Image 1 (cartoon, rainbow, N blue to C red):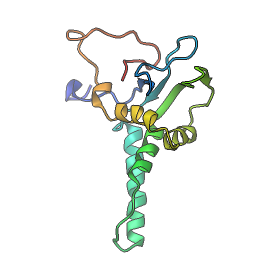
Image 2: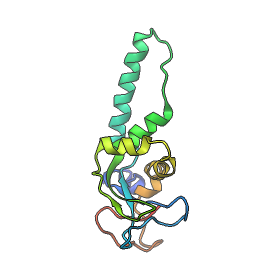
Image 3: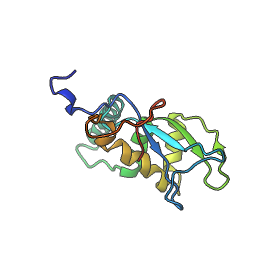
Image 4: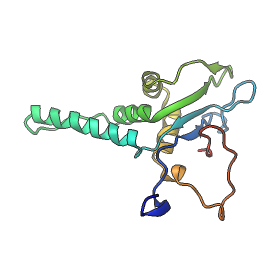
Length: 157
């Protein structure tokens, strides 16, 4: 344990984000009732910091080529790319047919999912969860009731 005790969030474990249907404001489920989810790591996890460090290196090189000029950054593109790097698993459900979407969880597929027009409602859910430290801090059993855990499931957004 760190000399700072439990102040640090557990950034090595993914947080399960239950997907909320934009129309019903309820957890999106398949025909059998299985919840749709996306598992994400914390934005300041090792993977998140590596992403940030790699991007900064790219921008420093671009700035050097432009002799210290401004480097144009599309913040949405950056956020979607980082969220894709933090995405570790999912179970996606078509909100109309309630059928599972059998799309493998890969970095390329996550990036495509988050960047596709009309997907802001979905992207914002794992992005906000990845940036909320409370999702990665273990709570004291004195002040809360532990949730049942399967795989990465630690709660809901």
